[in-house]
Length: 93
Image (cartoon, rainbow, N blue to C red; front, side, top):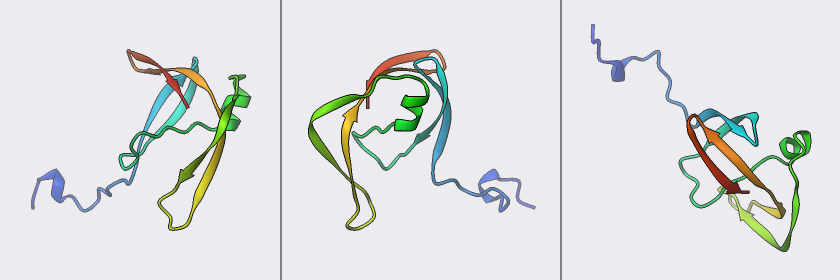
C-alpha cells in the first residue's frame, strides 16, 4: 500500500479556498479565487446586514465573468478593514 498522501484516492481536490476573516469586526466566510487577478467583491447583503456604508461610484464598472458572454455591473463601493489572523488591512470593494 502506498502511504504517499498525494496518491490517496479519498482526498478530493478543491476548486476554491475558503477562510474565516473579520470584515469591520464581523465574521465572514471569505472565498479566495486563485484565478481572479486585481478584483475583489463583497456581498451587498453582508454590507447591509452589518451596517457598512455603501457608496455610489461616479462611473458604472462592468465586471467580465469567465462564462462566455456573461458580465455583471457594479455601481457601488465600500471601504472596510479586513483581519486575516494577525494581519489587518484596509480594502476597497
